[in-house]
Length: 286
Length: 286
Image (tube, rainbow over all chains, first blue to last red; front, side, top):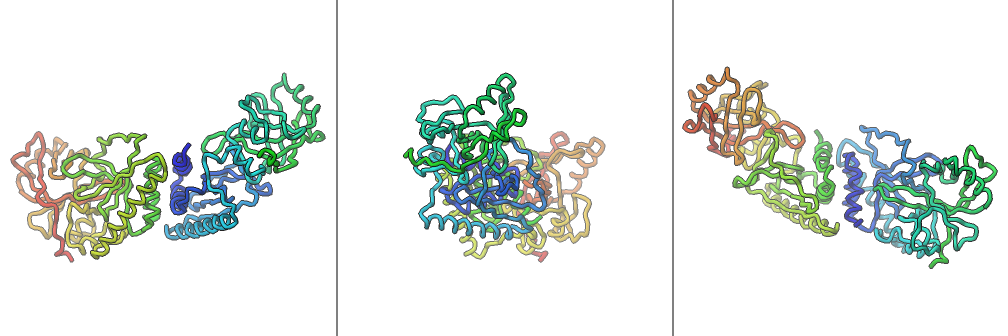
């Protein structure tokens, strides 16, 4: 995918909503910076367990969201979303609201203010020498994260392929076929690539705040073996659930390191894993 | 309709076509002038009878069209269109082509060139003191044309209501219910508001070059009376056919003054009227 295709696809997600299309294209064309990544219609988990929301425009490098408020067109509450949908953690993110007013001038004035704010944010980051220009080809590559030296949940790090996540953590594979790997680097850790949506064998899910995973095996023939297996080795799990981003591409996003809570797990309710670390050091892999 | 509603509606016509939406919104937002009228998806009659075409973006004040060429997505030839569709005469109009290239930069560079051209055109008109800022509320008003002093086919003058066209030509009506009026000002002239699409009573049409109208009565009970009537008084017709603009609003557009060609008219083929003047002087109505 080129930046052209990416950009057209992101903008086209706003097509059916006329005011959203107007506002998003105005922000995009007047900002006019191809080094700034943008995502339209991004699901976010609001901080402090306030549930998830859909923001109309998201700038990941700035951790900044734009919400477009159409008083005449009430948007539907988006409560039921596919469990495979990529939902990012919005810890320390900022939100800016554009309100659709009677006159175009009033809308445009708000966008002008927003653009000034965005530009000053970029400038601040640039002055701190921390600006990373958007690079579509490198952004999901292991090398990008290895150079950085860590993965942190708050930055929503993600990979396009299981093998990329594995190799970022020192597995050095040439091909992978599974979703469960014993770490070669981190003692007593496993890499886990679960699906947090119901499928034939599993019904695994993560809590909205990202602190708890419930793992359930649905296959009666495998259930007992799995349950015993979990209890027989007390391991930490480095978790990369599979999700689908807003353009329909697969994403394996780092959601943290989890430990099994044996006390609260049960055959009926499933096995509970609790978040013990939001980050992992990968600087040894340089 | 406000400029906000107008703008959103025009842009939304490009929504289903992603590259068109990108290019049109970029031109619109980067030009950023609310005094410049724009129309998306405008049908035009090409000069010299080359048939009609659909242009993606039209600036009526500049008589300037933008066509967006997507090499990967061949547009369908638009040969059959509703006869009620507004088709403007593109005499002395200019056309600019944006070609969708591989990279966004190449597309944006073309748009930058286009914007420079548009701005220089506006500047030229402004320097000649001929710039008329777009005024959505006044553009179809009789007073606007009366001040101008004439109607000319090449400028595509139009009214929203029959009564406005009548009063622009000195009829001074308070209400109208018909489509055929004896002129109070121009001797031996009638004002005619035909429908150039098939309806219960009539099958009237205008040629693509705008030079000939064929009038046919479809009602067998009225046919003979109408035909005799036409031949009994040799009058000139000031013609404002009804059409529908690209947002679905009615439009009565001045298409010229016509005279009946008795020699070539027949009961079978209909009555032929030929264009004798592309303009009418309305300066007496000041």
